[in-house]
Image (cartoon, rainbow, N blue to C red):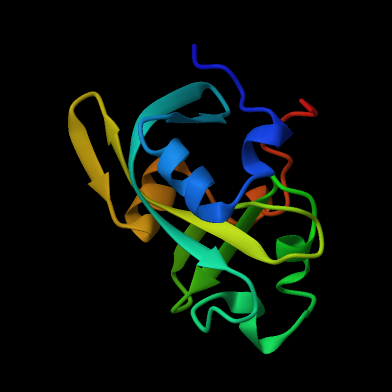
Length: 136
């Protein structure tokens, strides 16, 4: 089984983390099943100057997790139907994250961040989860 990544892995420049995540495994344990997929596509969002970053409009209740410690999940809903999974990167108080866009599971492509979350059962109940499981 793949190892959980330490917080130090995510506490680096966002582009470095994004490149390093490609090829790693995303493991989702949901009740009685576990699915592991190799990450093959990601997208980086870096700071308030990045207009595509949700934090570009300022610190809000919705974006607060982006300002928190690296390695936290940022899961949100778009169009009222698709969940998106991001991992917070860099230092606390600097809003940045990497969106997981596609994975490969047993040779099958799960492309598109909404499809990925649907297939893995990722929803808002997994928002603000420490993905490092306490590893420093």
